Amino acid sequence: MTHRLVHRPARSTRPLAGAPERTIEPPPNLPEGKMGNAATALLPMAGVMGSVVMMTVIRNSQFA
Image 1 (cartoon, rainbow, N blue to C red):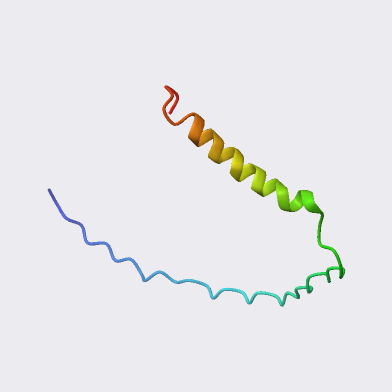
Image 2 (image 1 turned 135 degrees about the horizontal axis):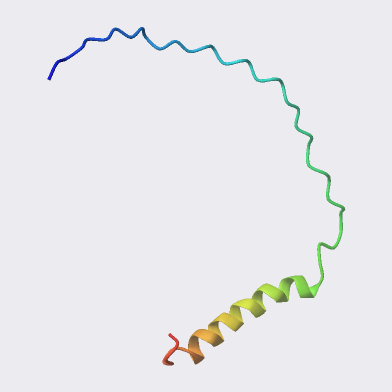
């Protein structure tokens, strides 16, 4: 088996181009006053209660 020595010059990389300036708009102002109704507060609670009920009911079933 012969070995051939190959000279490869060092890898050269081009400098990265400067990124253009980006402006970010501020978020819109929310209106003052009531933020939601009772359904927006009760919906997550109903989901949690449904999960608790399912974990309790299906705890000892063949599907768990």
